[in-house]
Image 1 (cartoon, rainbow, N blue to C red):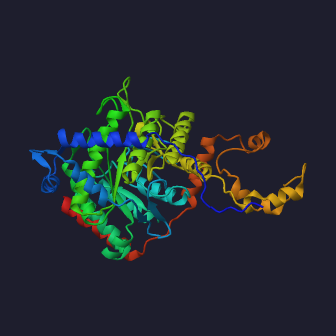
Image 2 (cartoon, rainbow, N blue to C red):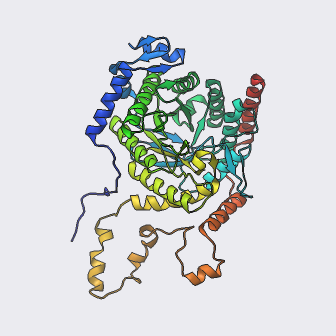
Image 3 (cartoon, rainbow, N blue to C red):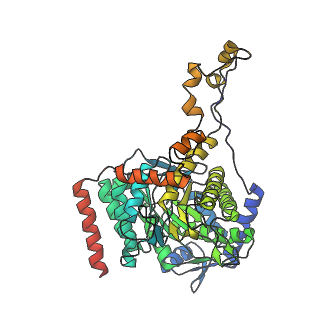
Length: 483
């Protein structure tokens, strides 16, 4: 008889960097920060670094290693984001992967007409409702940048639509601290109090720095406001190989790390222990077209390398997957999406975003998000690894059946079928005759049908009327102050 004395499963992994390579890249990045420095256009950011011992020359800051090393000791390795339904807790830690859509694409595929059109008000609400219904989408982003409003208020309108149409965690974006403050007011209104939000933050904020080696005033200001007010921040930047770094992946990694580590330092100097996620979209530039190649193999390769690096540093990482350079949901889109999702899951990135992007991030497609949910389901089934114990080995069942026996009627085996064998909802497995009789629909057809069913039937839990009124009031006050 077999008696297992362990419960962990061996799962497949995709590693790009060795520990020695991580150490070399980290050491080089520290040298770059000390000898080359970074441009910091935020006066507060420069002051924080200067007070900690950095040398400031105008807007250029030379950061000694001890500042970065201290930041790494106090940055949290793990923390959680919640949805307004607290059952949707998202524990952010290396090797626990969470998937969500992208944000700020200019165009949107209309989910009813299939038209490619500019993103507009109502699209974030539709995106949130679809993501709320999809089991394997863990958090929500807006997918498209609203273009029919005052640009300075787009993030506010988007967030107001998202919170009313999903109970899952949200990663919002904000281009300025005052907009982030308004998003925070909305989240506090939903949580019931500031202390309730601090205990269970229901959104994180996505903001950026510019490669190579530049921190904008707005990006740093937004990051520092988040750090001071207990809003988890995704600080994303890093170069495009061949455009804002030399074409080699190693040089791009050094420039990415120098930006990420200097950002981390500022966040931890503002408030020790501030939740911080490093992000990078390592899309290379296609030198033939000068367009960023979202579907390129380098995207997955260097997302995995960055995940390796951040695991070594003990900092959560946001990677990229589920996107394509294709212009519509076709074979290219499905192929690039599937490879990216699999490699991102294998790499162990804490968060993975940009599900649903087409045309190098210019188009948001809910059809792509729906298909991505199916792919993630399949990949997660592969990732879990086999469970090896007395109950699953079933030696007694094998002995009872004997050579030449059959197991289709064995109840213990039948009871585990849905657990052990993945069952698709979109991908076709039936006989050709049944597929033909059902209309011979393509994968794109079935995906559109599922999207239409979600839009016609799914309604997330509604916010209380008094909370909706508070959100409307906050939006109105920001609109008035902005005019």
